[in-house]
Every structure is written in C-alpha cells, then in structure tokens.
Amino acid sequence: MSLDCEVVLTRSGAPAMRDRISGEVMHPIVGPRVEAAALYVGPSRLRERLLEPNPLPLRLLDVGLGAGSNAVAAWQLSQSLTAPARRLEIVSFDRSLAGLERALEPAHRAAFGFDGAAGDAAAALIREHRSESARSDWRLHVGELPGTLSRESEPRAEVVFWDPFSPRENPNLWGMSAFRALFRCCHERVSVHTYSGATAMRAALLLAGFAVGEGEPTVA
Image (cartoon, rainbow, N blue to C red):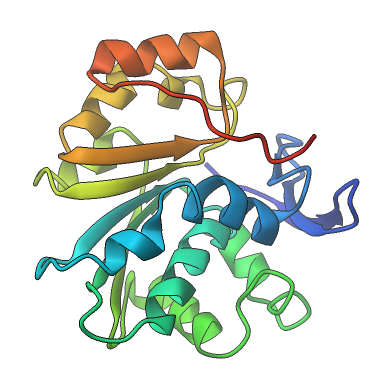
C-alpha cells in the first residue's frame, strides 16, 4: 500500500501526519508526542519495566509504525536510562514508510521528536531496517500484517503498541485472526495498548486469549 503523507495541525494546534489517500490522521486530537506519552509509553509502565532487575531485554512490538512517534518515544526513554536498566528491543511493523520519511524531513524533524540522535536512529532504520545503540535495538518489518508477525515467532513481547489505521481503512488488523497472530508472539505478562475501545475490537481480543481493560482517555 502506498501513502501520500502531509503534515497538518490538529484541533489543539499540534502537528500530525495525514494520509491524503485515505484521509486518516495519525494521532489526530492531541498530536503525536502527547499521545505517544499518554496512551502508550506511560500506561505501559515502560520506564518501570526497563528498571526491573531482569537480565533479559524487554521486547516491544510497535504495530503501525506510521510517523514513528510511539517507537521513538520508547527509544528516547531507553536512551535516557543507564545500566543496569534492561536493554530495549523495539520491533516495528508497517506496510509503508511514507509517514516516517516525511517526519524525518528537516522542516518536521523536531516537531515529531526526531532531532539529534533520534533522527539518526530512524534514518538508519529506513536505510537498513535496523538501528542499534548502547541501550536499544530497533528493527523493522515492512509488509502486510498479520503475515509479518510470523517473523517474530518467539513469544517474548512484553509490551505491544497497537496503532494501525482505523478498522474502516484496515479492518483485517482489528479482528480475531490478527490478534491470535499477535498472541503467539507475546510473553505471558504482556500488556497491549491501543487507541480503540470499540466493542468488536475488545471482543476480538478476548477471543484471541487476551484480558481486556480500559485506559484513561487522552482528551476530556
């Protein structure tokens, strides 16, 4: 699938990425940096989990890389910690890199959190599908889900950021088959975080084997 991405302003005045073809806006209300913190990094307790006394890396599946906002927020958190914090393994999935490529343009880098070393890491990810640092390992799978999830067959994911386009544009990623494919990749203590609270999606998660709860809204 090809995307045609442009940067727009949300109602709150924050920059966000919009696909001209589908009309979908990534992080449409409060913008990417606020939503990444409030909906994904914070509720996943990523900082606390990285600081646990555990010699194994923490694997995070970033489903729906988009403009990279959720993944780079996690990457920046891991970079801010020092040993003996756990190493962070981010595995991002998307079928197009157009959003990330647009976010990395000089005019938009800072607004999307890619100034400095974060931008270098994301550029390496596009170029080589992998970016390594002292505190993290960020890998990329480009292609259609749930098929690309089969490349992560080892059930070690402790955190999942599930952020593809909406069920209207991407219905296959909100049903039981997609969540069953995800379940096979997950550690028993996994937590999955997403922006949708739709009844059908919650039912699909339950049928796939996950427990379901409700998080805090990102807007009043």
